[in-house]
Length: 195
Image 1: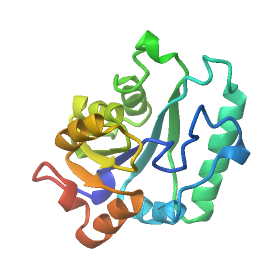
Image 2 (image 1 turned 45 degrees about the horizontal axis):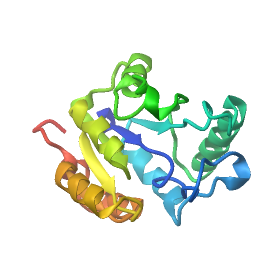
Image 3 (image 1 turned 60 degrees about the vertical axis):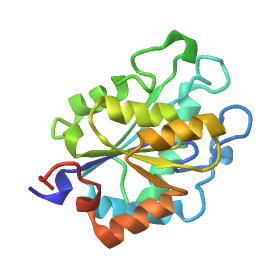
């Protein structure tokens, strides 16, 4: 099967762009790509047929950001990725408070299932979830994806130890994942014989 049959799921804050120390990114001016990350999307687009961003955005429920402002941020993000030669098929977000444990909020599977409805060729067994939190890794694991943890130092030591044992792969940045993908190909990340 074609390598283009693989899907890449990406968390947003702390993976694609820098996180805001306290609170949510509220507008385009606060959205900053992490060092070099923009350039990796060209490689991702060569390998993955579908690229999906999945992001918890409870700032909407808290009244810190509007849906319109979030769409503006994502339009800017996608535009910059396209200028760099990459693509993102769609961004899914969950606006609910964390305490509600909504099905759309990671680690629950709602955003991935919605993506699979929109893009029926998505096969979770041939998908990679890249994130920087325990909820990202659990989200991927629940669906049988290969999980990649970006250890950017944002998790507590206790949480880091658990994530490290749960994730399939560990990198200190998105750059490490992109470099390994370039050197070893998607086969390196495959948990099946079908690539």
